[in-house]
Length: 395
Ligand code: FAD
Ligand code: DHB
Image (cartoon, rainbow, N blue to C red; front, side, top):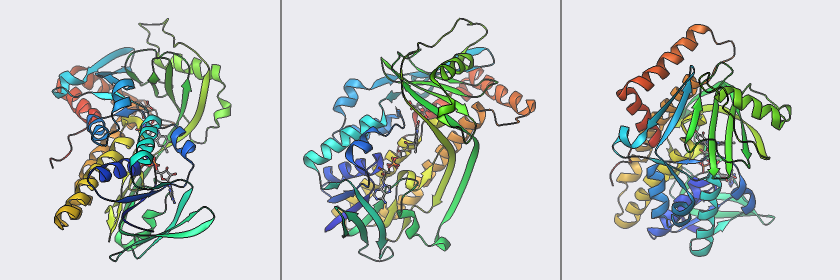
């Protein structure tokens, strides 16, 4: 098989890239190692920045998102017995975010690509890339019980943190920056109405908690837990009791979450990870294949979208004009935004969580920082600008 752009991975990065390329008249083939239903049901992120929303519309995938996604104009911070709301449009000159789950984004993109795009193969696992440094890289993959080859002008590794694309870069030509955190998240989905019409990020002496949502009847909730936690140690009642305690304020002692059946429960580790550069020869990396952030800033999915927006423009420019200028700028352009999101995600994570054995000095610093956000419009605007997402570079 031959194509212009071989895309490894049918997560949000790979699927959105395929759609944007299709709109620009650039051929692609997407290889996804999982089944369609697995890819559609994998519970992950929920918050879309304006630039991601715009890109999904440009990709033709905006219709259901515009109908069912829930626009949010702020978040609430809870800390030190106080609740403080950040008003995003007021702080950022009109920017807001939208709640629309990654499961739905992926479902919409898959349906479109199958209806009117290039090939999207499920249960097609890339095993390696040959000739990455040269002009025509070849992706080796296994599909329908056979070893197959996809010859490409360009390969884009959108295969997430556990993919194979990163490995084409010789160790001497890449630099990896990494950090793991001494805590994880226990995430649940529950058939219960959200407690509040925006997200609540809570700092508490017992650890961080986050209240999000998927719809007016489905809540998505997270609790900080120790690394290595077994979800089976958290029966539903224990989760609800702990959430009530962490969100409660002394001023609001009767505050309770609406409870309902818990339909999914999992533990997520937290890490930061960046590979530089995001290109080797004609192989480009995008999304989690190139960088991971801890989820506290809601940036992972949005960074993946930003990478492929920049890359789709560069590949279309190459096809239209023969010029490599934009492709040559891809890695630097993306890494600037990636490092901003890395910093913001680190800031949100370390400000809101309690590390094991954290001393009271550290806790006072966290509370002082949160108080600063609650009392200074400048500090609040800095958080709001980062959360709602920096604008993409102009075309
Ligand atoms: P992925 O979504 O990981 O997609 C990669 C795709 O490549 C997958 O479909 C995989 O099956 C496929 N693949 C891998 N290897 C191969 C191969 N060899 N051949 C073919 N296909 C392959 N972000 C937030 O903002 N908030 C959250 O709450 C949040 N929760 C998360 C929970 C978990 C468990 C994880 C792992 C991530 C979470 N994230 C969250 C991050 C966010 O979901 C990711 O940043 C986003 O999925 C990145 O998209 P991607 O397309 O780059 O990678
Ligand atoms: C969600 C996840 C996040 O990491 C976050 O910061 C906000 C919302 C969510 O899954 O809804």
